[in-house]
Image (cartoon, rainbow, N blue to C red; front, side, top):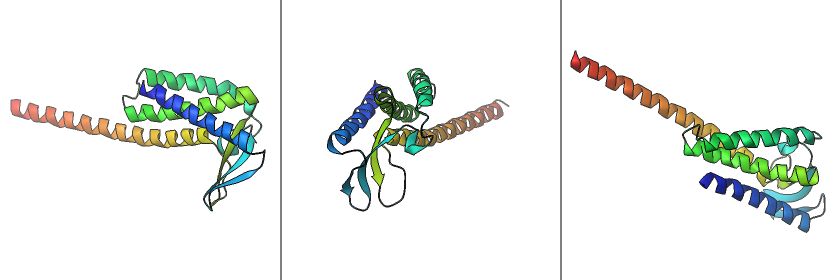
Length: 167
């Protein structure tokens, strides 16, 4: 249930920011947000996150649905047995769905968030969800693996202690 809400919220916030961008800015127009840090610039992207693979929109129209279905199955079956892994995957799914909506509806993705303190490709909320989800997944997965290893070592020690006591 919570994972579906995370996905829906990610898609909603992504689509609302894109709607605001299109209704408030002309293509290429800039608007300040946090001086010297963040601004908004309306651009169109037919590539991947952060402008990579520009012009390969068709690849994402094929691969995105497969990725979304796979990740939803992983979440639904609780394959990682760790709620933080599933939260991270839900963020990735929400971002993928947000960008897929644009690709299907428009043939490109609307980007608008521009970093002003460093030269970086313009991106959107869906890209943020995918990136943050990926980082959180990595951290959660490493943490879960360490916990499993520690639990395994504790079981081994308990078994050794029991065997010594039974002599």
